[in-house]
Amino acid sequence: MVDLSARAERLDAYLDDRDLDAVWFARPNAFAWLTGGSNVVDGDADVGVAAAGYDGSFRVVTDNIEADRLRDEELPDAFAVEEHPWHEGSLGEAVAARSPDAAAADFDVPGFDAVDAGRLRQPLTEGDAERYRELGREAAAALETVCRQLEPTDPEYEVAAGLEIALASRGVNTPVVLVGGSARARSYRHYTPTDAELGDYALVSVTAERNGLYASLTRCVVFDAPDWLKGRHYAASRVEVTALAATQAAARGELTDGPGPDTAGDVFGVVQDAYEAVGFDGEWRHHHQGGAAGFAGREWIATPEADDPVTAPMGYAWNPTVQGAKSEDTHLVTDDRVENLTKTGQWPTIAVDAVDLDGVPDLTLERHAPVVLSGGGEGDDADEASGDDTGPASEDGTEPASGTEE
Image 1 (cartoon, rainbow, N blue to C red):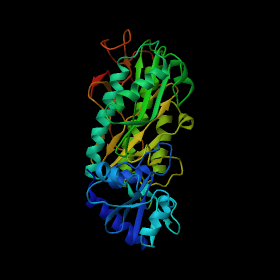
Image 2: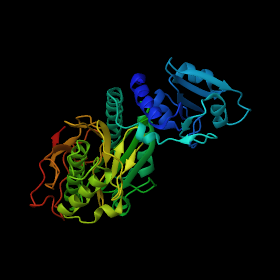
Image 3: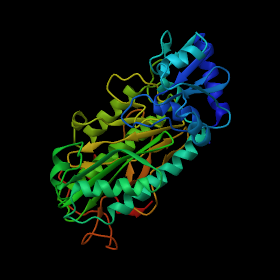
Image 4: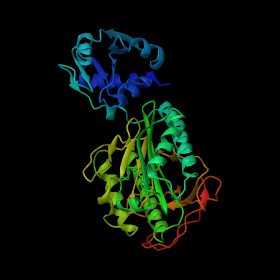
């Protein structure tokens, strides 16, 4: 359940700071953040079928088609549901007619200010974090179960369909499913599934959503490891761990010596340096590196000039890639720990150190390793992928640690 007292405290501060009397949310991720429920009927629509508001009390405005269902199935008792006839005007007009005039909204309401709901959703509350853990475990279990059943001749789109079914059976939506076999994963950073067979190895990525929270993760399965795969995967893993270490330092205000809070751009600078340190300078130019996660797949994506403040406790999904390899999980970063939310403990891992860079604290994390399926399919032995490095796995050229269970 959503901690409505924490939501009210944050919204009271927002309203006081802007001299407003009400704020309204109709975009699905913001509606879910405030209510814990869904206002989605048409998955392609930017705005849902109801708006959730706060003016000192919790309110929902919707049409008479949806009112009873939302009241019975989606909303906490604290929300008063107000309905309007479905044929009389838009949702924005219905909200305007029922709200105090000094108000903001995350969708088009005549005369209202705009609200950046993403900033209000950060940082996460303790209740958000616990629900995030549950989602992360479910998403990882589904993805890993599907991955252990793969065979080299499986078409990418069949793998994607299996993953969507596995997650749907757990009540989890899949806004992003990427499956890249050996040929396409080397060519594209967003390997949207096709009828191509997996071949020698595959990258399988998903962003999973439930109750407004989003968790992203990637696993690599190998049937006949390319010589370069192990080194590139380890390099990407080191960049990821370095990004997480820098994130934690930034959230504590310890990453830079500059005035004001440390930002997404500050962490991105560390990511750029980490790529150079592991032997793949400039690789960041080929794909975004991720960023904060929570009530959106990414609340913000880090760029060189991004000024988004880095907060904690907060979800972060960094996703560095080195051509043909990717390391990605969703982590909860607090002042004193970095917790992998998307793990089961059943997938082999390797111990990975952050790169030694100015301002970045020492950090060692267990990161998911490529797993070899000896003949394809469930029941085959899984182990860390073999193969020689084609680039340095670390500054001193040492080999990564052998696979261990998380």
